[in-house]
Length: 420
Image (tube, rainbow, N blue to C red):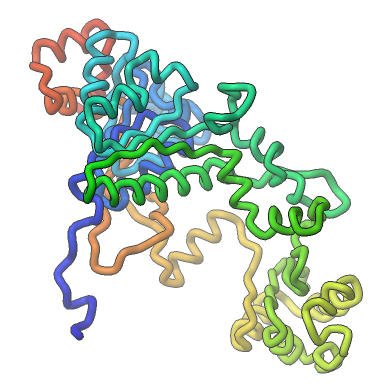
């Protein structure tokens, strides 16, 4: 068998798939960005004056004030840039009859439609699943919401922090003796975006072979509850609430943050063999031979005493020393890093995290690639679009003539970014 690197590059797996992205903020745009990273053509439909909400979610902004930015002269928001690469922007007013008709045609000619409008609104626009599938029976249609379609009360709004609270995620996050805390990123949206993308991919496979479409729902609440994995099952098994343990683990010891002489590190001895390696690396044979700590259940039972002994040893030397020792011994360990430090460190160590694209208003722009990589398959790479950057081209592709497009732009039903 020849080496993979000798094979010709394959087409991206979703080449030829068109996605009409009627979503905004994070969960939907994250899902469509993942599809775009696999080669799908994603058309991002935005409101022509302000665009996606996240275009205004700053500071911070990338770049100085620029009339071409589509962000009211403030540059491009870091938030928007994080989830909208590899897309084309169609900025059109859905209250305008011609604009709405164009988007209806876009959805009817797309393989996938993803939206996160409030229930009822999308149907009134003639863009709901029933209307789109009537014109395109093979369409894969995905609705993203905070709380699912059967939730009562209906149409309840659900931003990330609300769902972190309602799902139990907040209750299990934070110090044991302190208040519940939200996770530092909008994790409920990220989980929902991943679930939406997985559902779409599965339905696309079937649609390509049977012509049968699908109506998918992905909610923040269900995505987060399923994403709590062992903690939800622990609650069901015990009939009680999981404890909040801060930077430790409810059922594995040692698996937590430890202070060293100069910085914090994490040690994750996830089984008995790794615990023995840890004891040897720390030159603590007494801890390795202590019958109280021989098995993980014993270590959990005697957590306080064991953690105190490990902490005393780890405080004796700086983080660099312990990282060298632990990594050499095969013990899972890591430094507690800031985000920028983590990005630079990962890229420097060959993790291939960062990509640089040429942005039409900002010039060279660093972005973080998706968490997966396909060997031998080219990954599309285009900068996140300016608001309405592709409006004229997309409307032309949908069959509108130049005079109609000009008229729509003139009356404000369509925004076309100025690229001059």
